[in-house]
Image 1 (tube, rainbow, N blue to C red):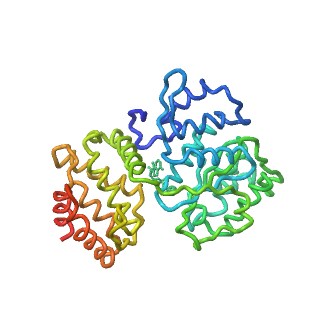
Image 2 (image 1 turned 90 degrees about the horizontal axis):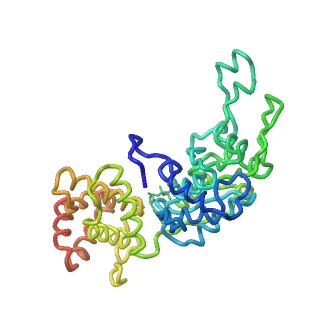
Image 3 (image 1 turned 120 degrees about the vertical axis):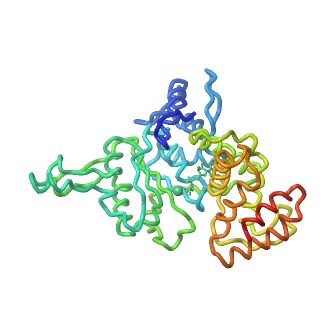
Length: 363
Ligand SMILES: Nc1ncnc2c1ncn2[C@@H]1O[C@H](COP(=O)(O)OP(=O)(O)O)[C@@H](O)[C@H]1O
Ligand SMILES: [Mg+2]
């Protein structure tokens, strides 16, 4: 469990240090060179389980075990791992936990944006040092990727497809040659065993900076799907809201089960453009109604309930957040939302209070 410290969001390897240590102690399977755990133990860390000594490993990823096995097996090969999926499918979350379990370090991170420069993947210079003493080891500023190569760890690259293509190309040498030349010092940094790269990319970004085929070939792709069923999505939201709530001192989520199910149902129906029974076609709003957004709607609702209500999550506490998540485009999304409200929510048994709360914030 997350320790109570002043840090708002400890890294996975700190938050779950106890689990990782128990896994390492129980793990008698072969570990690839420089891995902190065996592939089996890494999968157990992600999927959850109980160790022979009774230590409970909480599930981090809720979904198909096979996907995680493929991801972990890939990291033990010479190909990188590309996690692909729509926003909110836990790509970053899985990437962080994989790096924490494999290398004991999830912090060698490059955040991909349109402004990501080659220095973020190769290296830069400390200019004061450079001007004073010329190029030297001491003036070199290693990128997270270079550090990962030198130390045999996992480097993480977030939102790979947002990085300009010429900068992406710097990764090709890294992944194929496993070396980073430093011509200024007439030297190179060679990757040591245990080094690999986990990249994430949003498949809605397609066409932004399409991965070159040369780079794509250096990766095995694992597609993370949206949760398959309402029950699965409710479990993910409940679990994450409980974790977040504990670190923010919010009330426990047990009492929130009804509202969580409702929020998840609304999200799924609007996302899929049809009611759960398949009878009514719906307009889909423009925003991504992802699990991650459902988590934040419920967390916000709990904060409202805690600070301005009676501590119990009520329909009124989630209504405003829900409206904000659904209506991104003030015109077309509002039409979709109002139609859904009148045609579906209003008619549904036991949803009366929720309907009235939504009407109140929508008006
Ligand atoms: N299948 C899942 N299992 C566990 N958590 C999930 C799942 N899907 C979404 N989440 C949660 O959703 C949140 C957002 O995930 P994130 O990794 O930021 O998404 P992405 O990087 O794909 O946009 C995380 O808190 C994560 O715990
Ligand atoms: Mg992400």
